Structures are given as C-alpha cells and as structure tokens.
Length: 278
Image (cartoon, rainbow, N blue to C red):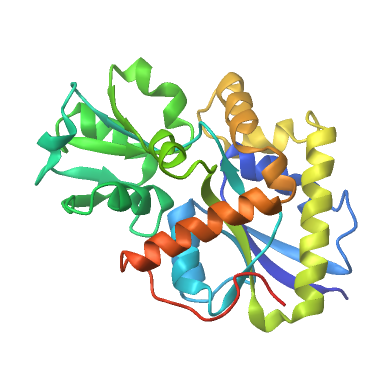
C-alpha cells in the first residue's frame, strides 16, 4: 500500500482545477496516495496551525506562523498581478474615514488581512466572517466595509458595492512584485524525499491541468456551489498561471518580501529556517 498523506485544499475553482489530476491519479503520484480534504482557506489555515494536515494550501500570512513546522512547495501557489484582495463599501468612502470603522475580513490568518495591516497599521476593528458572507454584511450595513477575496472580485459590481482599495494594486506599486496570496506547504517531518516527491507530483498535476483545461469541469462544478461557469473560468484564468507551475525567482522574491515585511511589522514571528526544504 502506498503511503497516504492528508491533502487540504479549497473548493475554489483554481484549487480544484490544479488538484484534480493529482487526486484522480492522472499523473505520477510519486508512489504516494492522497486523502483530500476540501475546506475554505481560513479553515485550512487553522488546521495547518494545529499541524493536522500533511500537505495543504494555506494563506501566505499563515505560512509566516507555521514555517518552523511546514516547508513551502514551489508549485501550486496563487500568486500574480491584478488579483489582489479588494476593500469595498456600500458607498464611496475616503480611506481616512475607516479609522475605528468595522471591517469584515475573511480570516485572521488570511493574506488579505495581512496586506490590509501592512497598508494601514492603524486599522484594527475587524470582524471575522466567511468570505462568501462579507458582501451581504456590507450591503445590510452590519459592517462599514468588507475585505473581499476569491470570486467576489468578479461579482461585487453586481451588488452595487464600491471599490475603496485594491490591495494588489497597492502591493505591486509598493514593491514592483506580484502578490503572493496562497501557497502549498508540506510538513517538514515528512522528510526531504517525500516532500520532493509531493512537489514533483503537484507540479505534474498543475501542468496536466493547464494542458487539459476541460477535463476537470465536472469536478470544479461540483465544488463551486452557485458560481456560474463564466465566473469559474475567470477565476481559474486569474489565479492559475506560470507561478502556479513554479514560483521561479520572481515568485520567491515576492514571498520573501511579504514575509520580511510582516516580520518587521511584528505581524508574524521570526524564523531561522529556510522557507523551502533543504
């Protein structure tokens, strides 16, 4: 029997698109078996913080808290340009008016919140809720603003919401680098050989998915809830790119920059271990 690893990823189209070939054994799995667990990204962050998963998608913010126990893989990331979290409101607001205002956020360990804190450290009145409930909370006036991620960036116009801030645009202007949102980590205790096998299998899976884009349609649809096929396609096109196959030098610089800035701001603990397994 092959060694079985727990594999956590989200039901978002970019993740189901990338992981479909691996969990359905359409690529060489490196002699490993995977038991999938699909959860929203903040739940995955919490599971990784507790060390409950062998391999998992996590926010890069969460990586900053678990890097002594988990190593980052070079494949499977959500990283790019023009894909950052958005801060939205029911009406146009000046950002200076947000001091002390309530802001709905999709999780304490999401990269979205980390970016907002790096943008303005004085903002602190956050209300955590599932990402798919944030726009409704803003519309109903339950919060003054909302930090939206995933497919919400494609649909907020239809809710009549106003964009107050594009954090990806801010990050790119500030650093000149693509924005690192989420990556795949593996438990360091798995050992170098097993982690290398996982990384090879994942990269093969991402490349298979990108060259056979239609094969995962049913699997994606089963997990995409009420998302239209058009929004699913836009989601995949935005979040699955060359960085998903391999972070490369530019992607690694972006991740390093984010972690360094977060560490300097006291938002994540310091670590002496390299982010990748040696």
